[in-house]
Image (tube, rainbow, N blue to C red; front, side, top):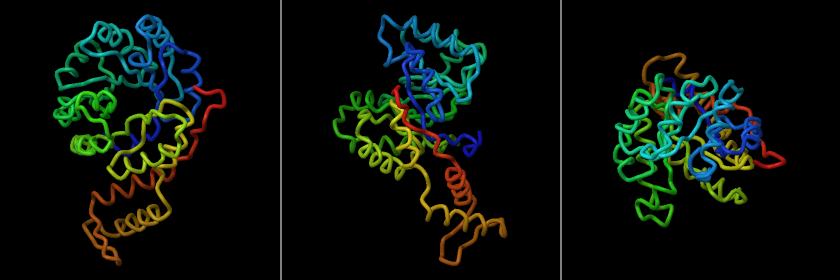
Length: 284
């Protein structure tokens, strides 16, 4: 997969049992709409959520639609995968609590044609198996589910997740996947805190973030947009690389090789994005 082609910055979760909210999300400007059948849906609404989501996915939409199914070791996931995987409007499945590649094999057994899979690492075992999960041929991306991960690890402070976050970034890169997006920021009113958290995640190597409200989208978009200095540096790197295919040093001493060039290409790709995400006036 080309990581450049797969650059996405905003991922918006919406509950699968709220078709009206899903419809608004499709016009929110998010790069991906994540229809949730798991945590956002009460047990007595699960069947309705699946029916509504299947109806939605009968057609394709202008924005990619991913669906988070229920726990893979529970009673619902197999039926959800079998029903949703063949539908033309499904772009990918998001799998909760993936512990090891055997979980992915189980999903592959349920679907005649396996759609792109995005694995959520939400346990200590999932983190330990991060590279094995990320390198599975059906996996197109990984991410952390930090709420469950904190509970599993007994971590109260976000600082305790620093190593785990780095592990996810390294595993994705080693498997030649796009950098993972950050986990959700739960306080939808604290946009300043969201911006600070995104800056921290960006420094660790994350790219983009999952959101739970449209008002978070422009904050995330802005946080991951390259600065003017970064754009200038990237342009200088590509200009130098166009005249010399090998490793070289710029006049200021910066060393340029293929990996640096790839990073510069991604920077300019991000810089070219339009900030189309905007808060929905009626809310999602």
